[in-house]
Image (cartoon, rainbow, N blue to C red; front, side):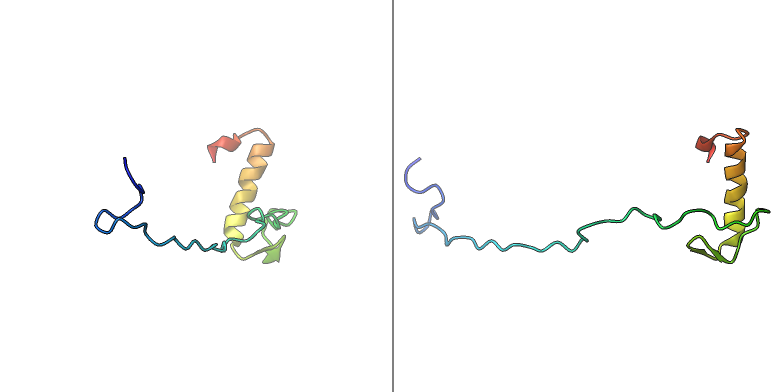
Length: 83
């Protein structure tokens, strides 16, 4: 191979140098684990869900259902993998 490998075959001259710019990342520098603020299901002692508790708002029936599943897992009557 003779001459400049990057040379244009028509003119025999090298192409103009490329301009490279740094691109800033749009992601946050530090990620927080999802739901790290949740410390429980916000259930009362009887298993009913409080309207606002443990960082959770609403979804009372779903939290009560999760509470039943947690109790079954703790009492070894259901495997956690079943979920």
